[in-house]
Image 1 (spheres, rainbow, N blue to C red):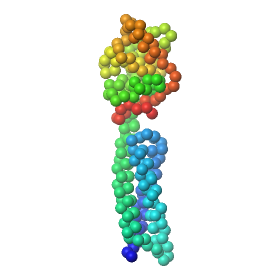
Image 2: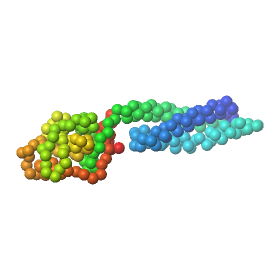
Image 3: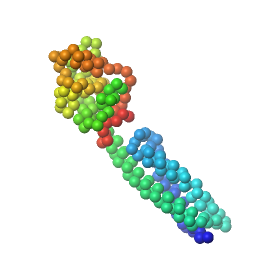
Image 4: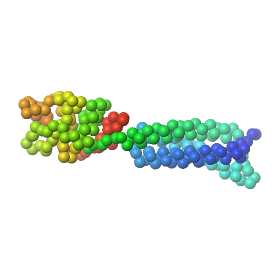
Length: 217
């Protein structure tokens, strides 16, 4: 029965150790930054590596015995093929993670009231720009003032006066959106809607605006 050589087994073990080191770093990244696009891939890689690592360790341990116990060449080839494929995916994943990290450095965060989530977490470049403007400190337009409502300002989303983002200028807390032009001559129904959005309180969420759009942190 053909067996793998000690050199073949040593190289397999060294490659497995390098893969283990790389996966440990990827796991730390996945643990530190939840819900990144690469997380499911990293989880899958960890499971696949855990399935083959014990036998590779056994191959090396037996090969180091005196006299050496060399593994079956067929078993070696099977593990070598699996490990080579894993290493290729690990290398691709490392590149994907590097892109995620670079993208994260350009991300902007802003606080919003939880009640506004469905209005804000949408796929819309104009909304992204409006949220970024609030985060940067753009004060937009004031009021109109309403009795019993904290000071609020609004930004025309995409320059559209009929689509407004309301926020508190002092805290940069985003309150939500209004789908009509805000002015003193608004109807009672419209004014009530403005009061409702401008007066929102309660729990808060953090919104992240990055290359992949708007998401809740």
